[in-house]
Length: 138
Image 1 (cartoon, helix red, strand yellow):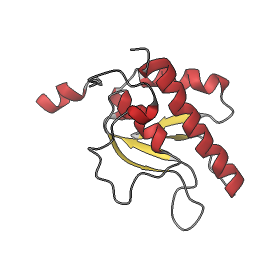
Image 2: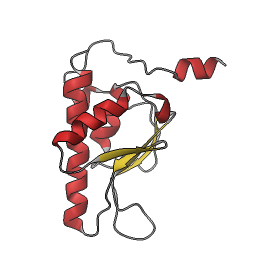
Image 3: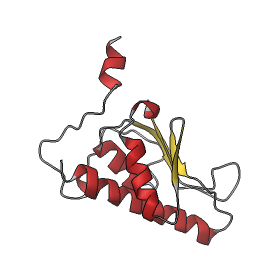
């Protein structure tokens, strides 16, 4: 199947190497509402790795929403290269990240605003780690 062959390995498409996370183009994403600010850098980093994101949220403490940030990635389980990247980040991060099916998220949930902000900062730290170590030097 052609689609499966295309999705087996991420491909990075750049006219020029991005100099920062903000340089990674998200113009093809037609989200409504727009991507939450607390998760946008991680979406950009995953897109910079060539992964196709399908949904994301910075996390919320009200209602039936997720009390942690998360990004859903199409075919995430196929991208074995991402697992060691996350493991290496986790070695130095207080907040540990996991891949749960097609979802990349922290291993813990927030019970208050301070803990949620800590998880959102960790998402930004993970994004910067991915950019610095796996995107900008390619």
